[in-house]
Length: 300
Image (tube, rainbow, N blue to C red):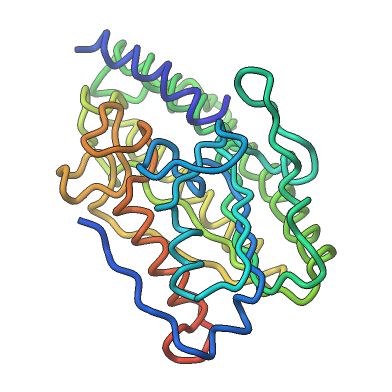
């Protein structure tokens, strides 16, 4: 279940339970890098319900304040294509994506060309099934708010962990995506962008965010492992990985500190998705990873 769709279900469950960072301007040496920039990804790339929604199909829910648009502006991209779409999985890199009202988004790889010079990609969260996990954890939290009912649901007495198994599968899918990008745009700099952390390391803030107290570390570790999967895939493919983990900006943070909105957004953004401040923070890190201002590309 895509995360954006799952948010609506999580919102219903929760009801039953009762400052942007500025991007640094890029120097002249970034011009060649950004001759043709293509952004691929899911809703954490697209920016659903952040003001400035634009583009077709409309139900991809792209915002002009998403990090690809901010990066394109900072680098002075000559040509920029935002192919990201809310709800996308790795499958939708090569196949069309079904959207609301019978509309479809073309395969995101259709935007790649041999002369593409920069590709950013943020994908894998929906392959893990983060939306379904959110809904299940929210529902189970009502049964034991201080326990770990969600962890018990996904693990067994023999040490098996369904989410760990999904992460292994996601690793292979992301590797295939990066190989596909290299095949279609062999001279492009490829940047894999991690996911902003949605939960704190421990405790949480139930019922505002309906995840049981002892489930918070389990879900947080799962997301951290997803980012580790992305980092390894990037390293294996010779791509740049952008680590966007910074504690204190999750769904439980104060309104002015949040980069990811909660079930009940306090700033314009979809529930359980980045807000404009979060997108600006990610954009800053992408620009820094590309070495804008130093001429040296780096992993951060």
